Length: 132
Image (cartoon, rainbow, N blue to C red; front, side):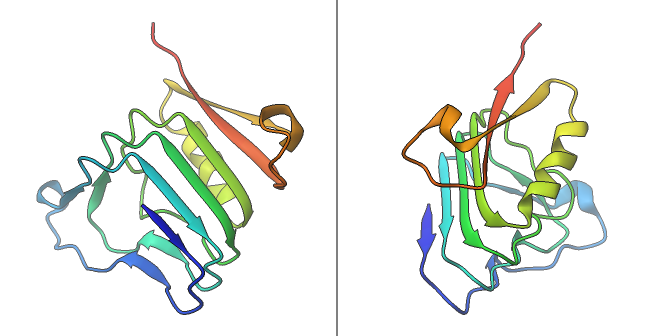
């Protein structure tokens, strides 16, 4: 899913959850990549109370989304996520919190040139999954 160059979009998925959160799960079964670019008013992917599940998501790129602070309430499930790239976004603090939550995920911060020299970004996050 690539969404770019829209000055008015504030949220990608809109909706509210009910009080029973155990039944409120949105599953994006086939979505393997997100790219959000140049969305100056985008604050989150989803601000409702549903849990989000991305079983096939491998890559997340957020660039020039200065108001984006979170993907959703809580921590989404994305077991196959391998690469996260962030630039000009407030999402970095959210990703740092994700790093502390599931013990089987390690996020390694690299300087921009270490991963892909052609990228001009503030920092690059690479998600490493360790299996024991």
